[in-house]
Amino acid sequence: MPKIVTSSISRSSLKRPLRNPRNLLLLNALLLLGILPKICSGVSIASTASNFASSGAASIAASITSLYPFSDGTSGTCISDGGYDMYDCGNKINIKSTTSTWSNDLAYTQSLGLTSTGNSDITYITYKSSYIWLAAFESNSGNIMEYKTTGNNGADGGGSVSYGALGASSTGGYYGWYKRVYLAGNDPSINELILTTSSSWSHSASTNTDDGTHSLAGTSGVTSVFYIMWAGTAGYSYGTSVFTSVMNTFLSSCLGTSLLRVHILRRHATYYG
View 1 (cartoon, rainbow, N blue to C red):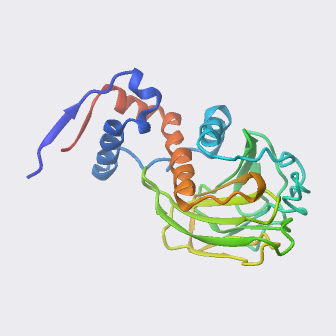
View 2 (cartoon, one colour):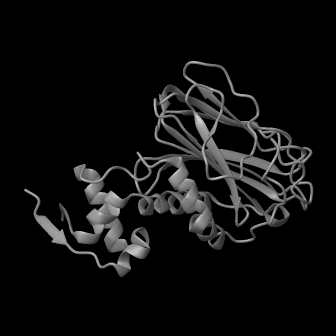
View 3 (cartoon, helix red, strand yellow):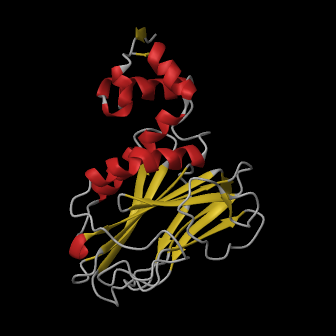
């Protein structure tokens, strides 16, 4: 029979709980026992976006080499150029529910308040901070069935495309898929990450470097989807480990938005050792 270990965590260690290996081990054990809900599960996208704007985006940006400071992305329904021909009206976002068809191209909100997609009960937020771009979607009834990004990239057929699955996040509860368009001369690389709570969704993307299509589709609905995008200077190519790091950094920030989780970690926690 596994032994029970009780551990106390200091107030100072809670400032960055998931970056302390001891606290991460403790948190994963709590998740396994069902004492603590999975990271980001049940946390509103408004809270998640607020944390992203205040510190999460800066943490992600600090971890990315050769980050390109693209322009636009705070209004309209696409990024018209972004600088150095990154896009030709790309990064259009759409959502599909279990009970309806696709939404129209959704307008960028650059707001921490929820906006209706006009599709079932799905609401969303877009926010650009520290040159990291976030779209977050939420459906309290679990009606999100598919997400896609479309539009034209600026690569004009040059460079390369790769995409694939990252697997489960280190914090639990979410799975990641990525796409990158890179090495198209001086055009900034386009790097996209989609996160959701189901591991069984189908992932697809265009292999034409000029086509921004990137989608994730399920057989049953989920309550939340996150999409993160950044650019790399002069077509910089990022390995899958960078996408995994961005996923984990973003999701770990959700812990700080739940007072219940912080209270449990602050006082003491019982877990299997």
